[in-house]
Length: 123
Image (tube, rainbow, N blue to C red; front, side, top):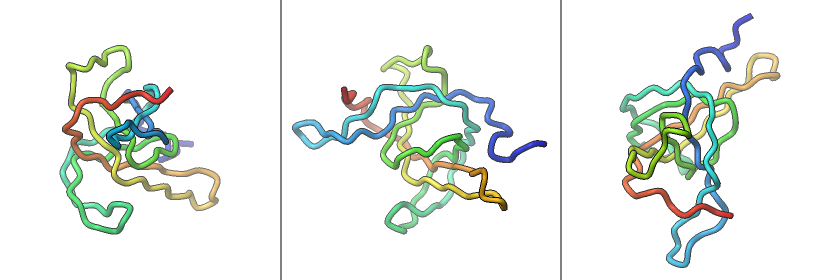
């Protein structure tokens, strides 16, 4: 049986989950990077953020785990990442839709371009 929750997640992405600490100037820290399986679709569309406001997103990504708003993602394997690579995207919305039986979930995140460099890593 093919499950929509897992089918098509054949790409690798690097995820820096949103941390709970901030720097002295108020910039949020992120957790150490991990590599996850995704289905990444680059396209601009309108979506709702956590406050219910309409925003323009740059990518829609199907993921296999809950991801906090404010996390950063990059399309590519962790081993290929370097600060010069750039093209980071920030998670601005997370959606979790259950299957009919409620035993599986389809999780998607909406991403926008992140113009700054990678913030400090939370230890």
